[in-house]
Length: 400
Image (cartoon, rainbow, N blue to C red; front, side, top):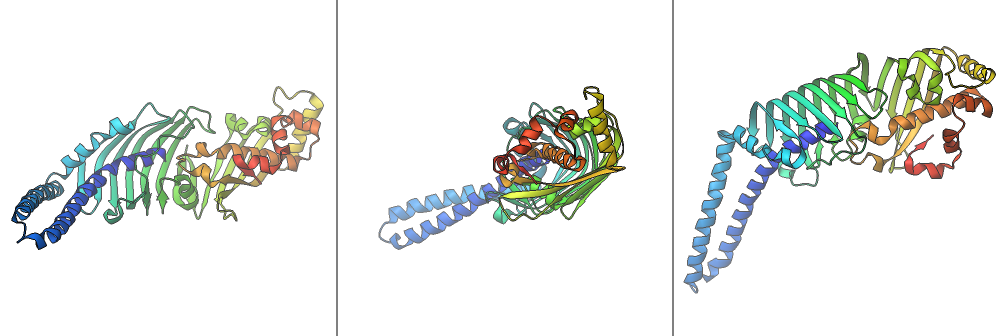
């Protein structure tokens, strides 16, 4: 999402420059009209003032005429060259290198169509190298100077490339804030690499389609999680989104079971289904997210550092008694401010909150003694954190 937001923000340079030129034209016409209305009563009394004003009118009209003719020529004959000139300075300002094969559109209607687009950035928290078959932007030119530039449509199709995340901290803020009435992605295949220890370090992702309406650059992750409609595959496993819910299933844990927290150290195999649903909260300053983890077809074995044999056996037996599957549903409540400017799930701390909730709920289902919980791996920092009053946990996000 960070890559998409940055690319769209930089492409907005083109209609913004055109809108600025049109505003200069309009302002010049208004000034000339007002000046003429003021000077006209003095036409017989002060002929020198009238002659001076006529020179100003002719000079200004000539300049405005040249600007208007230039805009018309760019729009009709030199649109592609004009777009290239507008994007020449993008890399120096933002670090995003944008290039394209063909461009069509209009500086007056705010439509920009690019084919054969390449977008690259290196040396930042998230690097990317993407090839895009087609990009279409429709900007509402009548409202373009709002604090968040309104776009009626952004359509991106045929994306190939890779995204590498080096740092979980928030990336650079897009140069231009914007709000898209409808975002449409289609035929997307990218390889996501995470170098900071997310659930999956290498994740090939494919989107058949991904639509969001609306998408605000300032609260992009709220819109993606709660308003997204998508279908695709991640590492060959299908996922879907719609109605404020994201679902995926049948993901084998394998060596990644330890990413489920202390309890995950006891799981040697199995598949996990994950469901995330946006809920309506009573407090507009927070966003509750229901997270459901379903672990099935798993095997239990004590880790090598589990300590004494008898407590380890009791823990393994307690987990086994839960049945052929473990299903935990919990609610993570995040403050709305956490989402402001966030461009990926890692910046929200959502995975960490979900795993903490998973271990808390699992402990309640197991009914183990404090001694056994120590053996399970829940006897120190996590248990201390759970013992805190809820008021102390809310600034970092609450778990219900």
